[in-house]
Length: 76
Image 1: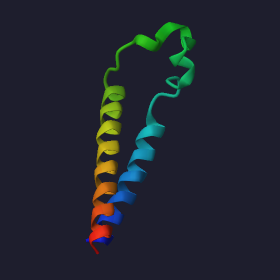
Image 2: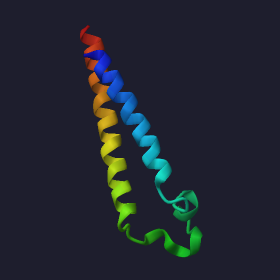
Image 3: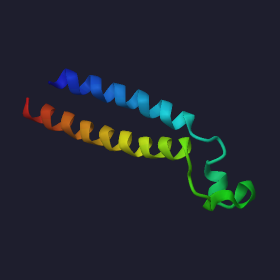
Image 4: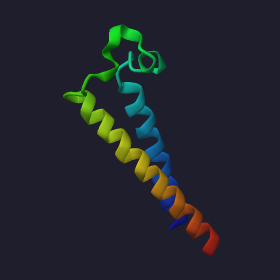
């Protein structure tokens, strides 16, 4: 069981890295403080919205699997 959870954590982490790297390049800290011509308040559309939602799902799964690994390790 612990091996399967560890493998799932590795797969989720690699997928999370890929999804984060695929997101738009201009949406870093610079736009947070008004850079990029005031585009910081625009809505996400299309593939950008899908990548954003997929990032949230993967982060949630990463945390859940991490907690599951901790629980299984504590009981073993």
